[in-house]
Length: 624
Image 1 (cartoon, one colour):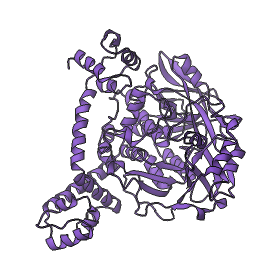
Image 2 (cartoon, rainbow, N blue to C red):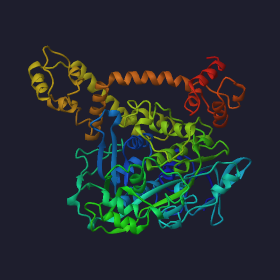
Image 3 (tube, helix red, strand yellow):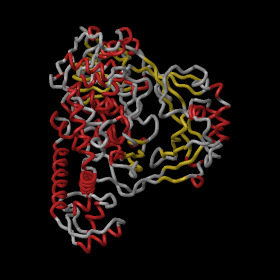
Image 4 (cartoon, rainbow, N blue to C red):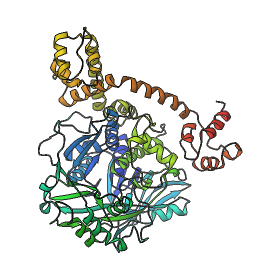
C-alpha cells in the first residue's frame, strides 16, 4: 500500500470526486479517502442536477473536462431546459437522475482514472510541518503523506441531525460524522462556524394518487449536459408531479412547533434562505394558503419519491400527519422522515482564489465546508481545487476563472471576496455578464483554457473546432444567400411577421424575433450537413448561430463592459500593503481590506463595505 502521494482528497462527495479526478487526470498521484466507497457523489438531497444557474455550472464543469455532466447524462431519467420563455442567458438545463445509477456511474468513472487510488476510512487529523500541510492521519492511525490536501468533507464535519426532539450525530441519515479536523484548525487560528441544511421525507410511490396531481413530463427533443458527442437514450423517461399544501396541512405542522429545533433554540447553524423548511415557509409567509410541492422520482426501477418543498425537522409523526392532508397523499406511506443537519464550515474569506487557505500552505477547501449548498457548486469548487493543487506543486501559474469567463468564476470570487452569512446558492442574478455566460457556449469559453493546462482532452478540442467551423460556415451561408421573395413571404406570413417588399439575405430574416432559425433552415433546406455533424452537434450549431444573430448587440455591449471592468483585475495590490495608512479610506474599508487582503483592485471593489470613493483612493495611490 502506497502512503506517499502528490494530492490527497478527503471526502467522496461531489466536490471530492471532481477534485480527485481533476488532479489525477492532470498527472498527480492522487488518493481519495472516503468513509464509504459505495456512495461516491451520493445525492443526499433531491435526485437532480442542474437548474437555474446550476445547469450552467454543470456545463462549465463538462467543458473543463470534468465528469458531472457525463454522469448526469448516463443516469438521466428526465431532462428539461428551464426558462425557455426568456432570453438565452436564462436558459438552464436540469435533469432528474436515477440516484443509485448516478453513484454507480461515478464509481465507474473514478476507477477508470489513472493515478487515482482509494482508501476507505475517516480522516481526523492533518499532518502539519513548518506551516504547511504534509498529509493526513486516519482513525485507523495510518499516516498518508502528500504535497497537497483538499478537504471536501461536507456535512460530515461534526454533523448533528435533528428530527423534533431527537438528535443524532451523523453526516447523513444512518452514517457517522467526522471529527477532529475542526478542532485542530481552530487551534491553528482558523475561523469555524456552523451552518444548517435539511431534507424532506421520502415516500412510497405506490401510495400516491398521481391522478390528483399535475404531471410534469420532460422535454421530448432529446438534450443532454455533456458536450462530448455520444448518444443518449431518451426513451422510458419519468415524469415529476406537482401538488400543494393547504390550510389543513399548515395546522398539522403547527402542532409540532413546540418541538421544532428551528424554533426552540436547538439549532445554532444558519439555514439556506432560498431553500427553507416547510415550517419556516408557513411562518415567514403566513398569508399564503398553499405552497407548491414537487414530487421527484428517485430512479427508474424504484417506487421511492422525493418531496421537493417539504424539508422539515419536525417530529416524524407531525410530518406524517401533515403529509396525509396533502392532495394526492391522503394514503401516503413514508420510507423515512425529513431531518435538519448542522455541520461545521470555514468562512471562505480565509481562502485564496485558488481555494488554498491563506493561513496554511498546501491545504485546500471545497464544497459545503466553504459555506455553499448544492451538488453543482460543490463539484465546481472541487474541480478548481484539484486543478490548482496539481499546478501549485509543479510550479505552474494558478488557474483562476474571471467573473466574465464563467459562473464558476462568479461563485469562487463571491465566496472569497464577500464571504457568506448563509449557505451560498448560485443564481443567474449573481452574474454581471449573463449573456456571455450562457449554457450553450460553455465549451467555447472554457475548453481551450482547460486544454492548455492539459485537462480537457484532444477529443473535446476537436469537437469544439468542428462546432466552430460549423457555426462559421452556417453564418457565411446565411450572409451570402438571397431569399426567393415569394417563398420567403409565404414562410413569414405563417410565422406571424411582416412580408418583405424586396430581396434580402437570409441572415436579415433570421434576425427577426418571430423567426425560429431551425424552422427557417429546415424549410429552405439549409441545415448543417447531416453527413458532417451528428444530431447533437447540429442542434448546438444552429442554436449558437441563432443566439449570435439575434443577440449580437447585447453580446457586444456586455463584452465591452467586461473588458472595461477587467482592467481593474490587472492592477495588483501589494500583499503587505498597510491599509491603515490611508486615512481618507473609511474605517470599515480599512479593516476589511486588512483582513481579506485582496490581490487586485477589482477584488477590493467587490468587498462589502468598500465604497467607490475608497477604490478611488487606492487607484490614486497606485498611480492610476
